Amino acid sequence: MIWHNLKSKSFFSAYILVILMLVVAVVTGQKDVLFPEIAGMAMGVMVFSVPNWIKKPVHLWLSPTLAAFMGTSLNVLSLTPLLKIWLGFVIIVILMHIFRVNFGPTIPAGLLPIFLGLHDYVFAISTGIFTFVIMLAAFKVRNPEKLPNGPANFRKKTDTIIIGIVLCLWIWLAFTTRLEVLVVPPVFALIFEIFHSEKFPWKLIPSRLAVLTITAILSVGVYHMLDGSIIWVGVINVLITLFLCNFFKTPVPVAFGVSLMPLIYPAWGSWGFPIGVFITTGFLMCISAAYRQFRN
Image (tube, rainbow, N blue to C red; front, side, top):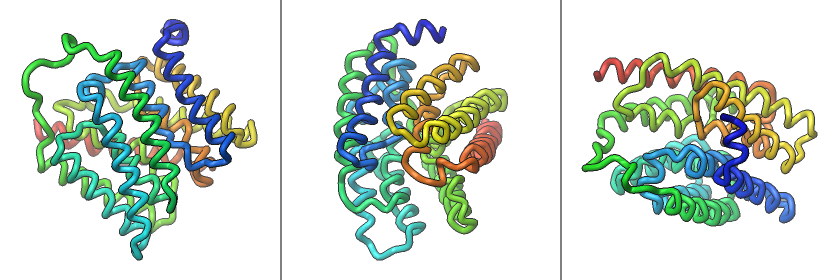
């Protein structure tokens, strides 16, 4: 399976897009170009063809791009970082509900510029460019005949409010304890999506938790072994993540975003990061599974 993916044109295209992002960051000397979820989005669309993502390709471009610009703009406000993140999160979730957006990576696109304290729009512009390419790829791989027919059930307001409160409390915990490793934007996107899924049984947790945690461990290891080289760390970590997804037979696109996180923030390049991923993913997934069991 892994060899089949490596030989496929879809993987090659997604891989080249990620490498291009890494090269642009190095050539321009702008780490703000890096948006880890671009790797997850590229793999989710071109390799794994996540149905909910490719159903409305335009959302793959507009949603994260507008969220990135909005998140950057909020940094002009005279508020604490925590209040800015809360405000940004609430605005994003409300807009996603109004425009019926099912694309989870919209959340990290809006939260990252606030968390990183970005005041220019390099991150937002870069996000807009790369997500535009991913949108075009989604139009190409999209097969209407294989997509669900009929009107899809959109998220329930109650579910959105509950998971919104849970994630806001989790972010508050991270800031209060000064444990930045508990802030894992790609995982927030995953939790937001599975919390709204019709079914999420307990048996799905171990494999996803293993993929994300081992990805974090090996990604930090490669980051230190290669002395933080942006291109080589990214190139190797994406391959490692693909291998893990195939080994556990669990495609988790957000894991590719996790694999690039050590490149953009010091705390995410520390050995505390895998612990943060394990705790954040495990705890929030258990809440999601318990809630779905309760609702069903």
